Image 1 (tube, rainbow, N blue to C red):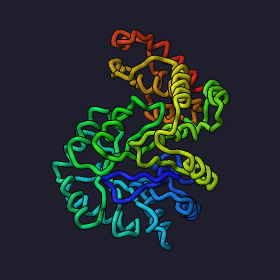
Image 2 (image 1 turned 45 degrees about the vertical axis):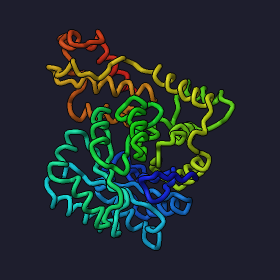
Image 3 (image 1 turned 180 degrees about the horizontal axis):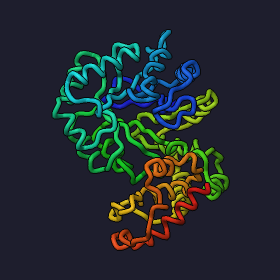
Image 4 (image 1 turned 30 degrees about the vertical axis):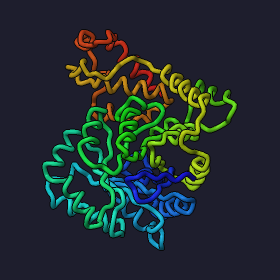
Length: 378
């Protein structure tokens, strides 16, 4: 397995990092797991050469740090670096930060956290966080040895990312990136900016929540017709690993076989190793996915608010996502949230207000009905 070293860090990190949010098949961070099984998976990964463990205060109903702490007993703590995250939404003052950090250290059964991240901040959140002295808090705890590296994770717009990363002396940043998200959130532009600043990047959602692991027919045909045979998972990780700005790529594993397969995949990945034909293949794969787009909605939200309470952009986002990645309705988070919140297209009375507001000129009422019929039938 490749281990990468950046000037800002004191040690190299395994390119494959174990994500500790989705043990036991949990679809999100709000589900508990089989503790014994999770501990075995963590130790299997470490025994296979993985040195980077990623968790957070809120993962697995706030039990992920506890499970990881138990797994790192018996000498395993000394073999890894721990990344965990402060829940910035739960912080109002210095004492809150102090108490949360101490709680996380106790759960993890360690005297220090290697990579301590401000969890999912945007520009507004970062500015508020600085007002209560979070920047000084991280620096103080770094001097005390309770944390080693000052970091943040990010899910917002590129403009916010650029502001935050330039506004402070960060040691690492964690972003969402995969070959479909090159223009979303921080995207490739954000990755390159971090590289220019000498800040190592840790990647989450490399498989887009597993969506890139199951290729639709036209995508699989592209893979099958390429001279070198690799699984969709390997292609996705290989594309990321080719980027030298990346320190570690996170992957959550629910079974021992997945840990074993990931370790094997990452043994053959290195920076700047993909040739032009391979990169061109990924470009074709991206376009093949995009060709499955159902509606050219940009999510500008000019159509909102809908007088009938329909979340129009969310309906179209759920529809496009289902079509691009062959997602059944029971696995489509946006679809199920629309139903839970009562924002479904069956409430539409075809008043036409949204049509007049849409800069794309979309026939929204008709498209809403088509979208909901398709989504409900999956």
